[in-house]
Image (cartoon, rainbow, N blue to C red; front, top):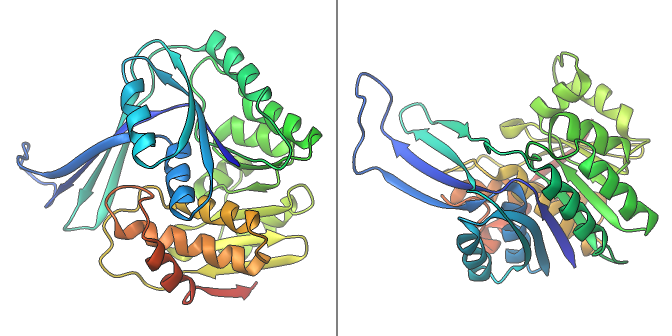
Length: 309
């Protein structure tokens, strides 16, 4: 079983506009909204790829029924702990003229210290041999910034594989627990280093610092591909140029889903990279994050370029 941990759920709204300018009001826009959070996006893609996945999360009472219905729609198992309040709201505005997506991420106005402690205890009790745990997304105010680190350490004690995809101090502390794999994007990696990154080779050199700590370390670079490290191997993985792209939100979550599913199925390092890269690319073809087309994934996978760097 793949278990995805949802700490900071949201309701995500998506809008498409012709262009920004003097116009201040836009009507009759193409739009939609759905329950989200990196763990939900990940779980959706992993389920579409054919794996059993469960989302364990904390969800505010005002919106918990929406989250349950959404997960049930995709036949994703879930174990949700109800807390007070409402889910934060994120918005993505895609400007057609420039092909730029603007992301507005909300933050919960509440502090969840007691809830964090209860949630950690609940998760600890669920750790079992042969599971694969995925810790992704930010943690809400009041949570211990070592929340992921402690759970990763508990998983390692039971020889349970873990994946980490977060930012800031939760990433810094989580990496110190040496998860099985970690997937920061370029911005998150630069923040982790507290140092300027200058070009691809510089990223490679700095990423190699982590190859002794973490078995599989990926740095996603958006349209420039992915740097993938495993022991002495360092690969640059690039998807083919994609036509008719609709939305880039969730590409990192789809990439992580492909990587975890590949490892679960015993793929080689190179094939894991191909599958993960193809999933990230396929995500751009649908408006809803991580609602990937499995046939598109296999087609793109054949065209992914993987080379040593």
